[in-house]
Image (cartoon, helix red, strand yellow):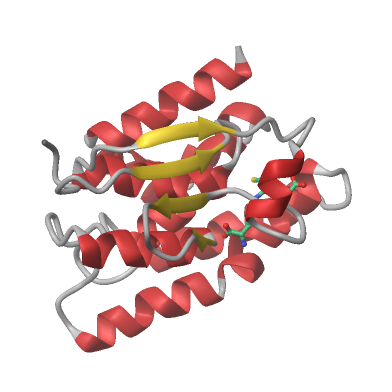
Length: 202
Ligand SMILES: N[C@@H](CCC(=O)N[C@@H](CS)C(=O)NCC(=O)O)C(=O)O
């Protein structure tokens, strides 16, 4: 039996979805046994809309007898507390607040520029400025919050990796991002996500 102690966890997932990647990476870090149901985002089945109205968004985490958990941030925080090892939130209260702040600012700092660029409404310059901001936040050899790997890094890295592979952006021209990615790519769940992205781009 795995760490789920008999409770079957199901992740409603889509390989191309970076929000799902957040949940996949946390599940991988924790080594949690789970089932995956792949949702076709191009032909979204009616049942996923019923499961997570109104749009049928993924990810959604389901466990028998427990409330359904949509929203990647909710899923990540839940998994981190439900499966405490390895801890993916910092020990200090202040740094935990900063992880929450990183989530809060995600759309402004990365998501907005990424989707505007992807949808042809933004510019490479705008995205590069966003990368420069993240590079500054990382600092030399650092992580997004504090001195270690946290949910904040997991929350941002799926878009950085997709920007590199799928949008052809030289994200590693930013030195601190390059070091951060090398450090993260030492981790199996990150390498697994790199492989997922590679298979999407192939
Ligand atoms: N705020 C949500 C966003 C999830 C989201 O936007 N998922 C996308 C796929 S990446 C989705 O299902 N979008 C609806 C659609 O494609 O119609 C979260 O953090 O989980």
